[in-house]
Image (cartoon, rainbow, N blue to C red):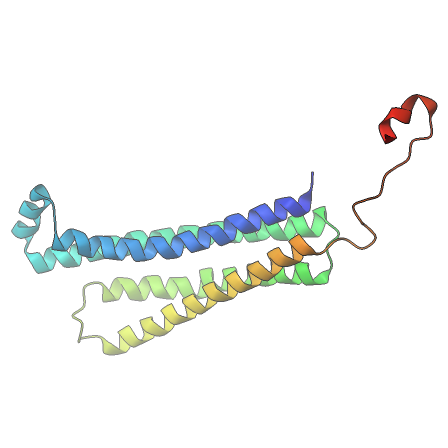
Amino acid sequence: MNFRRLACLLLGVWLGGSAWMTVDAARAVSGAERLASAPSPTAAAYLSAAGRDVARELLRHGAAEQARWALETWQTVELALGVAVLFVLLFGTREGKYPLFAALLLLVLAGFERFMITPEIVSRGRLLDFMAPGAAAGERAKMFVLEGARTGLEVGKAAVGAVLAGMLLVTRRSGHTGHEVDLVDHTDYRHVDR
């Protein structure tokens, strides 16, 4: 088994999943707005009974809760993928210190985001879901900073992941050229070297 390929596969799943989660979070919020603006006839009856503004807030809250759950779940999966990439590189390959450092950095960034940034985003987001827009300007500013930090971490993880993927795809182990052949000297095995 080629463990470098396995590490690249795991890294690709990680980077692709991160990109998908970014798109999915934006889709969830816009989907709630779209449903509130143009509901189906059956949903329109329920929304008008609850009141347009209340229904809009409930739909936004539901979409935000779904996005928060997906974010926490994905970040737990990221940690598992980070551990897997690090262990594959550490125990399955003869990679140098730079790829190992990049894998460790990815894992540290994912852990910092999961355990330091995301819990704050989730708790503050739940507080802000039902507050009036002008009532919590300070809290909204803090949330904006936290979201900026999370976005910065996502960009940093993507950059480190791309560099690590480049190192794994381009570099070769020292002393391995890919053209070495083990010669067989037994007369019955001459057909192997042809």
